[in-house]
Length: 187
Image 1 (cartoon, rainbow, N blue to C red):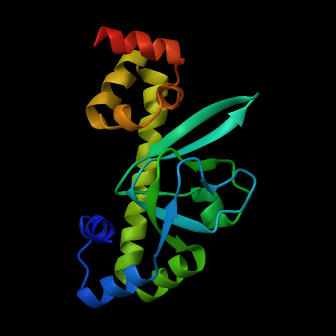
Image 2 (tube, one colour):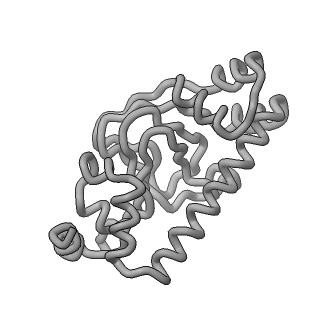
């Protein structure tokens, strides 16, 4: 839980008692490679902090898997709109590797928002970071070349290329696996 604690402390200052209350709301969940954290069509009732491993958020369109995002250690993952509004979820979230997660259910999440002001402050930062990531991704897809997207990902998250199958990375970049292979040969 040290990574989770450090993640929270990197955004907000929290007294020890409040931190203990927050951490106690999370439970350890281990997923094996290939297991699902969430399936499309279900209502999302939990959010996970990735302690170790990689999870992929994807959908299937016309029989083809489209990867939206790959979550790695020290990141949170959930289907945000389904988690907040209790609507049907559009995404599959699946373990790419064995994963160790700290999971908070929706009920405990919102209870903490009411009882721990620093959790609410942290939660607001999570939401802001999620929107910023979405904006960055959308801008990147519209205004950068495949090579620029590849170079940025390689610079920002080089470890993905060690642990994540290349077809998932290609899909996340919005290119074919063959195009990714060509880009990798250039570098």
